[in-house]
Image 1: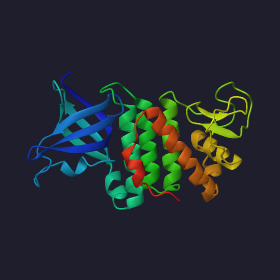
Image 2: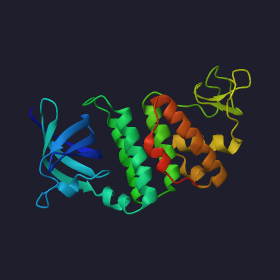
Image 3: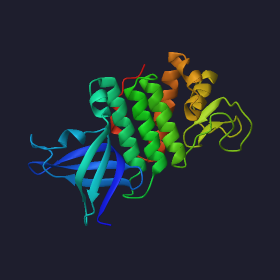
Length: 243
């Protein structure tokens, strides 16, 4: 069908010509979609403000040869306004949408789990349910797990030896035992391993009570693990305020 409708998160926007924008969306049923929103930069546009990054929308699109065209859009959750008003939340959300874009780069390949993870993470940020850095690290770990790169935080990622282990190696896949431990492996505090496991499993009672030192250490490991598996730097990570 030429026309189709879906729920979507607005990942990013780019100017096109004098009045248009290219909108990159992560949809529930159609994966990542790039579409032209015509005239949205004009003050008379009916839905320009609805297509801002981080917003959750109900969108109708017309299938094109290279880019689709937005024909109708309704706001489902105006997270863009809420997150854009706070620098810490804005930068955190930026890392999330950049990561989601990287993990769903094949256009129109369905990725419903990635969509739902991002939706939940943006909601948690906007409603301030938990510390922003905890929400971010939990989202990154779970998104990587859905993509097939689930780290181990207890048993050895190489030989499967029962943990808890004392070392962490990004290349090896997480926790490693003394026998499998490659040179240069990190040696996180035991509490950091517990926090990482809680963030991956969604144990917020454990995560919310973590010491700031262990939060900082876990964030560094998550960032390293993310960028290793994406095979390139996540530029927006440098803007995030840790601590």
